[in-house]
Image 1 (spheres, rainbow, N blue to C red):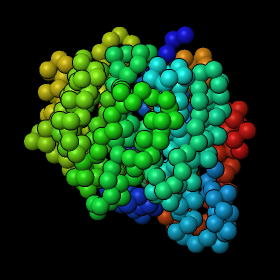
Image 2 (image 1 turned 90 degrees about the vertical axis):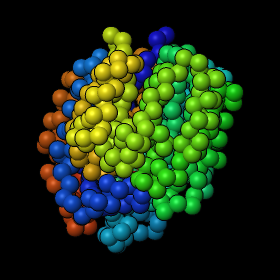
Image 3 (image 1 turned 180 degrees about the vertical axis):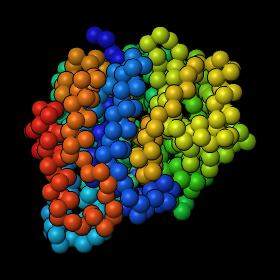
Image 4 (image 1 turned 60 degrees about the vertical axis):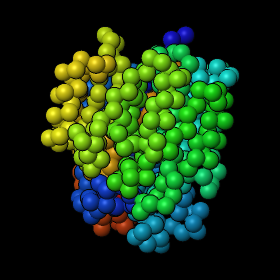
Length: 417
Ligand code: SUG
């Protein structure tokens, strides 16, 4: 059995819009009321997946959820016609595209039972994200249905907020050997919510049967949350033995680095000092919301949003990084501007799973031919634009439901309709 890393990207749903729903996410607030371009944003996502396939990486996908979420509105004893603009906007968000928040994943080598564990995130802090988990859970249960290899867990119960892999990192010598898992939580008290609660991280680590001696719980720095890093993956990313991190990511960075060096002596910590890239530039450019991947030919690539190389201090720092000839050998910019305008960079759009691809439902795995057929549906069915005022129009709801049904049919995933 060959364990490989597979990046599952959330397809950008037809309801993608800018309703400014995420307090503490500066891009979402800044773009509130802008016209969105769901079709173009979804096609950008496909181009990113194709670029990853071309790098020789394995690619998976998750499909958009039913929008408006009529079941959620019914649970609030209302309907899309009667709910009013605020609830309707919350019921229409395309936020499941940010698959890094779908679940926390612990690969089989880390778990006492030798199976890969996935815990769906409850996303309870933000109303528009709090109703994602049932739709995500159905997909995880289908994609990772083989009980010999996977355990899919339900959400941690409220009031403990869990935002999934965006607050979790794994460091290891190689994907197929036991690693060190790092859970990053926030503490309430700042201007913005701390979405990941320590109690939730503890519960996930227990459910995944991790070795407590190889598990680190690290507090995110309150300055990072206050500056707009609503998830840890906005200020840090890890891959195999490399941690790429901003100096101000953790409340006590030296304690985190010491623990990592003790548990994984070969760890390489690439820390970006605030004097080179300020927290503000790191967050507006999304430098750290990069996919740090191991290339089949060896060495690592950092897949960054185009905004990173357009931010002068970040571009200078990245040039220096490549010149140093360290573990990161390539910087690959991708254009995901539609998602970025809602605070979702390349790393937000993907969930990493380490597994044997043969053990996964092939309907959730992507190749160029499948992306071609998805592109046809998107070109034909996804709205070209959505204004915030459109969100209350029944004609839009019908169009969104048809578009999703067409996609699910083309992927033979009607069971999710
Ligand atoms: O939860 N944006 C998402 C972005 C998630 C990014 N994910 C990671 N960092 N892993 C969020 O804030 C914007 C929705 C709106 O305003 O309509 C939104 O939900």
